[in-house]
Length: 300
Image (cartoon, rainbow, N blue to C red; front, side, top):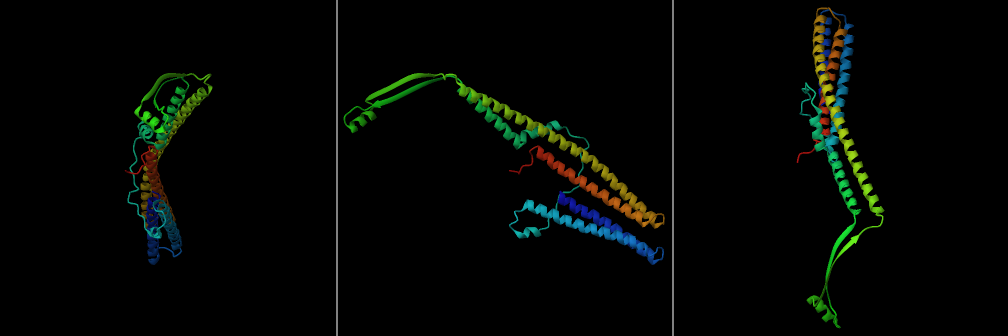
């Protein structure tokens, strides 16, 4: 989006340069018919020079944004990628929402999809399992133990081994074993630590959900504010265009000066740049809204 802004801003500066060059042409024509003094040309030449300087800056900004985007897209091992011309195809113009969206459904999506929240929920579940195991370890133990064997009692090894395989002298036993640790302090301390860990993980999850809620509300407010700014700056552009056209007409009939036309041209350029910046910021805020919901994931 910053590259898209740089390219669109170049067009804005180029349009302002076109107005300045047209004004210089008109002044030259008036000088030719002796309707203006040659010194009147100086102000228009200065205006054209300023606009051309802005064109140079705008062109360099495009190159800088392209390099920044190349760094994100490519690994840099192929030197030819630095000579590839990157052209954004998505339009920068955007229609902002008229009404601020409710944040509750978006928070629900974020809580369900955010990888960091899923990780914290897994940590809570693991802590609960550990706590359950620690609680079980504090209880007395009652085990049912059974065993079975076959003895070999011959004088020779092969005969004794054969008796064992043939189970000539089987022996089996079954017993109940009850264990009650005295004091049980170690297991109780481990259980207490496990319960505290569960509480800590739950608090971390709760704090993360609050942070996500705040992020969603901040992004939604940003979208609402930028939407209002887009509408206001679009109106500013419309009025600036009207003022420039009016001033150009007034200059033709001798009711204005070249300085006023230049000032109106500058106001129009600034209004168009503000509109572009607001639109780019709105696009970026839309991306942040997807990010806070955990929806910026590569397609499977």
